[in-house]
Image 1 (spheres, helix red, strand yellow):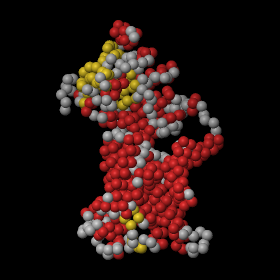
Image 2 (tube, one colour):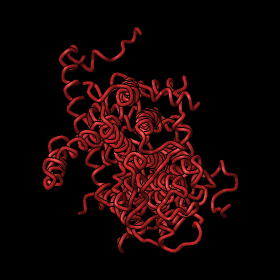
Image 3 (tube, chains in turn cyan, purple):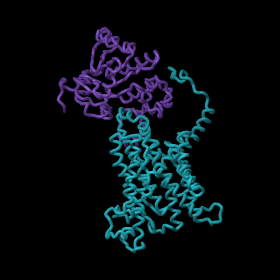
Image 4 (cartoon, chains in turn blue, green):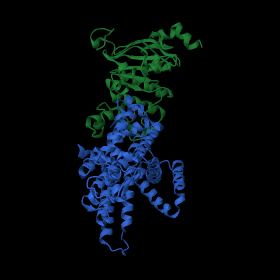
Length: 383
Length: 256
């Protein structure tokens, strides 16, 4: 049953995305590790990390598209799920430091020693085990999404009100994680990582593997999302987006449809965050900043929401531009981002992918013969 | 179960039983001590001037609005005031809205697929596979509603009349025991109106139907028992001739 559902996810679009991502997952690490720095196809170390970061953002945008593009839930707090997944990974990486920290305490991370804590808080238990940390990467964002969604969707909070409370959620988490006595490193967050699964986190081989893992996870997440939107549930999600109350009169419970999409989306966002942290080497409360979540919305809108592929393109495109801008004209970036968002909303309501499909449809129409009239299309009695 | 005012055996009781129902919005009594019974297999037309409470009555039956007082029973034993919209839809009450409400970004076929009788759970939808029976059912409804040729078109591109028919088709796909049809011929041409009357009469052969309509020609075409609503309660009931001769009905229609 599940295999069949996943196979449905592998449509033409998904094959394209999966092939590109697998090719990238092989090419980039191979080029980085095997070619000499002088070679024209050589990918330098910094670029591997940078592209890995872009792919994590792409995965976050994909997650947002599932709820915004298909269910009509404009979440302005998806950065929170990303950050929570990142923190779960960060906690594992902190425990891997062991006694190599500044204070040489094998049990406690440096910041806890600094705060004069004597034992590990209960919520840090188990994070020395990789499998447990990976489970938490999915469970914590998923659970938060479930509890949040349960109350919000069941009380029929929709539209702009829902967006505002998702924004409030990520802001509340930002304030909470800033506090030192929360036990997550406060303002500084978690950093100074050494090893992941016994491999040095700074070694080019580890970085190349992390990049490959990110590309593969993005491909898997794409197939899962594609399987969902291609199923009857995907059609129901669109129906809920367009005419929620109508689905109720057909006997559906839109709140559960939204809850499902929201939880799946939060889990994907959490995984993206977990892949992000070892590649950038730090996670701090800044990741909960409301502006981050809003930026994800801009990527998704720019690429074209409700297309799955668009948000990936949008995330990569905006972040490449951002990397350029923040080096060339650091003061102008936020203005450029704002202008871009206004431009897209007014002139490209369907995003970049909307232009592409619009052009293709125009070409198709020119090729096809004129539409048959209604009379001609009616079945004849002889049939 | 709840104590009943109606006869003993569930199958002898009316399909729909409204007794002394009242509801007010901000002091305005939209429904005022309304009582109405619908027998099994019956088709009923509801007429009445604007603001008579026709749509509010449908809202109460489908669980959208909760009455302040009164009893609403379906199928003898189900107290509709205790359930919400999805539950009531699954009991077997289907509704067509005054303004045609179809899923515009889906094809005609997918609109029917969404409505098709069957499981309504989230995981069931995720793993759903179109069975031969379901495909045949959809084709049959497309045939009945004369929409076969538009099968793969987006519902947004249908004409107003075709949207109305698609919504009736969606009702058929749900296969409810009771169909509530709100102004099915509003904005239709004469030919389309006639066609709709034919369609509804066909549906009424094996379903119970309540039709709310302003168009008297259409109601005459249906040739069924008529209830005239005024200020939230039934003013007159009987054949269309009987109701239209009733001086009180003439008064509310012409008196203002």
